[in-house]
Length: 335
Image (cartoon, rainbow, N blue to C red; front, side, top):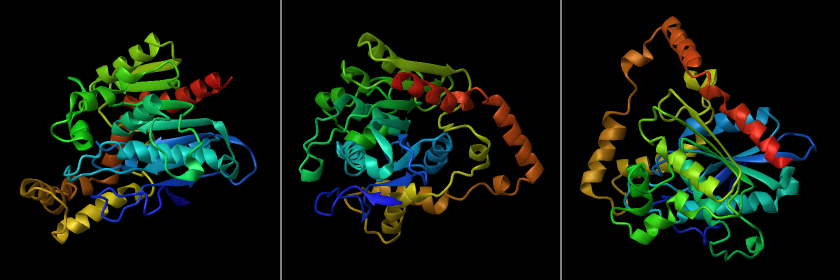
């Protein structure tokens, strides 16, 4: 089930192209009250990627959670800095879920986030700046947006030297102020009431340096916030749940690409808003010239593909353990 997070008059991000931030639910068909996971995929604040969306929600659903996937505001054109809009989206998502906890059969004090990469940055941002945003909608004014815990998977944490520069650029633009950089550097804003966090990363991450999770772990330690921190020796960025389905490319529905698809349609029609000619050219090359998968990749025989999947499952067997470790951690902090 899809729920849009804003009324039309509440949402005004100029580069949305008709997209509305939303959540999709995965709720058990029974009357058992359950813990909640809100999955927040990454995508460098340029898109919301499907390999970290439904496939993750279903993994936690199968473990007994009632789950949601958040599709928040992004901007692949990088023309209009997002600023606090994604943070507003996740804040509203948490409030909506908490306000409707009985309807969704979840414990209102057991709402956990599970974010990846830039999505993990977004989770970290609301973990450190909860209850700070102005709420004009009366039905949500007295509802807290504080998560009860967060799983931060290969997270963007710092806005400093070890950051993922493209994420910060999409979020804050080309010339962010020192105050903005400080505000969105998650490790610098950990407080004594920041929710507990479960962190995991790989040493070999080639996009978001592993130091990001270390920065967050130290910030949590310094404030005596309960946390767990796992660093796996091997693996590139974006391993998601590292399951057989993941390596097969069976990610589930691709609804998180809605805003991206709307941008591509406007790119075709030359109706993008405030996008430089240079960026338009880059986007056309990305989506209309170089967007086809390699023919060799498509034409790989099934046996060769099967061997590749078996090799990946063996190589990343340790990484694939993180959901089980995270669930055990959630159970501990609930007791």
